[in-house]
Image 1 (cartoon, rainbow, N blue to C red):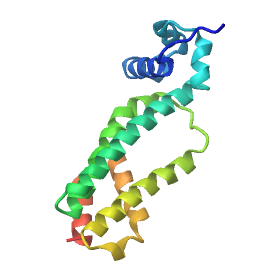
Image 2: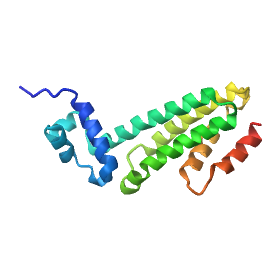
Image 3: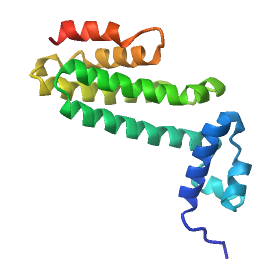
Image 4: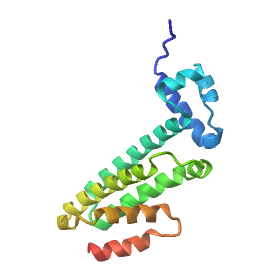
Length: 173
């Protein structure tokens, strides 16, 4: 009979996340995670088909936390510009957190383009809600472009928020 491990998936996840940020993508080994969890390496594969899927799960969970923070901020900000700042800051924080891992991981997962479109769609919907809150509901059509712009600016260290703020201030005074 197979050994039952209480909270195995949670334990695998938390130890993997700890190692990912301590040792980087290359330093995270499923063998070490299994040893820390006191399980066989094969048990990890019951929950995560590969190391890449495990790391993607960690990043996705953190993205949901960031997205939730953006949504909460956009509900309370006093201006459109402050909402765009909140979105920009959350993306920048997420990118800074994962940049060392992305730099170290050279492979590009299948479906990257589809995930980028999903990300842009999430941000576009958030921006459309923000604009509607401030009476700019007729401006929802270019939200995918605005989302792509905010995302691109937040990901590039050489583009300060002030440039985006100037554009946002002109569009939504």
